[in-house]
Length: 102
Image (cartoon, rainbow, N blue to C red; front, side, top):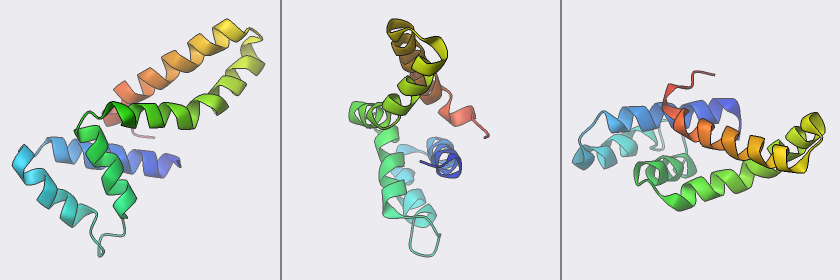
């Protein structure tokens, strides 16, 4: 996922949260519709986050954990520490998604 896409997900998530739950689908129809330049997968990612879908976090973790772990392992040189760094970093990333400005 590119930083721009990650930021766009955060932006749509924030904007959707500002609306009443019953208005979110219409907002996403407009924001991720064919004339918006965004795609259906982007909408699906935002909807998963809005639903607090645990699978969304698992998919996010599974996507980024291996690469982050390899980086942490090279820097720390210790497998347990690299695992802790990976987990802590990804949890913090999800918690800070709505405030991240790239």
